[in-house]
Length: 87
Image 1 (cartoon, one colour):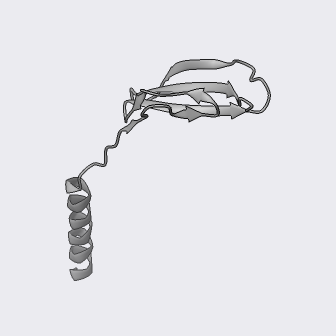
Image 2 (cartoon, rainbow, N blue to C red; image 1 turned 90 degrees about the vertical axis):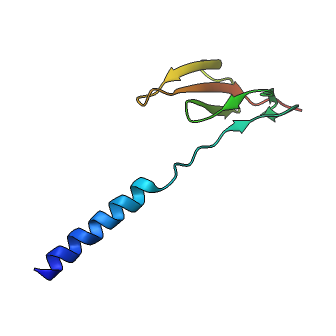
């Protein structure tokens, strides 16, 4: 009986600790003259609701450019398929 009571107490303590933990939220803000693969991404901001995903290809991608995609959790992701620029 004591093991059962201890197990329930431990589970309740763990659940309460996880529930009261602060959520981690971050924001990425690209500053001036920021480039990804030679493409300018200056002034763009991404957080939990607006995300960014950038793919760089050595050859020309099948569908080049950027598009917004809705996620299951209600957020949106900007997906960009770019050809890597040469110097």
